[in-house]
Length: 266
Length: 232
Image (cartoon, rainbow over the protein chains, first blue to last red):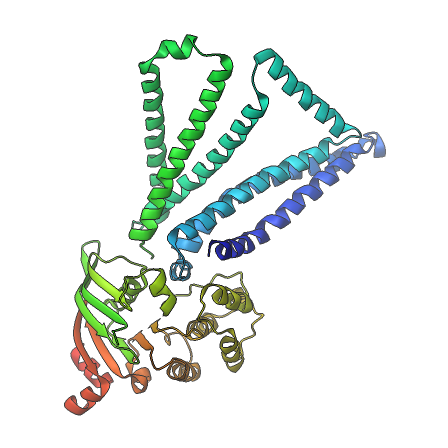
């Protein structure tokens, strides 16, 4: 059933994202075109369309990420906890399928928004031979990091990607948990969701700080002197990934319990 | 054969106020039941509890012998008192949606009923009037081969002609093993289709009876009895 839920989830959201992505790519092409025109053209009057299109391009990038966040919240709140929830919660599907369909959808669009923005920047920066230069620079960078700092770049890259991914997941789940807690109230649900978000944020960062302090108290000397820079990097990265996963699990459990046991549709 | 719906000591409160107070009910199969009561008497709360949209404070609900969950949702067809349809789909999208999720959904039946009520399946819900949306919703709900239909205020928002068609749809479109519970306070309109009635007031069941019994014993219509029981 998760597959079917995802199908409708993407149908419902693609119609907002795809036109905006297309607009961003078209805008970056227009910018590229305008900025490749000699600036003496038309006695410098080309500067006006140039600055307008640059401004529009900037707005579109902001719009893409604002839309990503709004759709993430709206698909959860509107589809599950407003009137549409009467349909979604009477479908013969498990509560985890409902949560995961929203989570996967939101994460995929977040990654797509990042990817489309990167592509649009590459279009703007494009010059003949750019890709081979870029590839050479990246190889050079990795080699230097490896030589100078003795860090295994491949491992660091995998850790970085995992960290970004788990950060996205935990941010999305944190919003879900807050909304799921907010719906417990019979009135002022949106306000209650904001409140829940602040409380969750405070609780989780307090736990994080306490965890760091405990690590420091156990054996600070060991961390200071006995491990290499590379080991420290891996330790920090995996520590953050682990922390993110613990957060994800906590937020997921809260969301699940609220939707399963304490559903309170208006 | 076991009952399709059982409620035992079912209690639900909202912020200190009891919406349902220790309700016990047994619904047999193959009946059309009117759940009748004034506004705020607990009709919708009871129906939501059966659907698992609310969780009881005490007591149990069993549909087909099972607590509300995936198995009960497969056999319950629910029409809420509000519009639960999103506004971006076309009617035909909704029909595929229902076909995808409910194995007992009959798309052909749905298209037939749409044609009878002059609703274009290619129309978007955004462009429809409230009454038309309610008709679409009812068509979707009645196109399932469910065992229990829970219809919360199914005729409140539609014109009398469509009301007749809808009631006709309800009595002709369910199989003899299934039961239909219709919650409403428009009693005279639905009285002729009912087998049984449940009167509910302030969270308490005040009367359960068959319509024939009321007519024989009391010598009056359900509508008249309702007006007497709930006299303000």
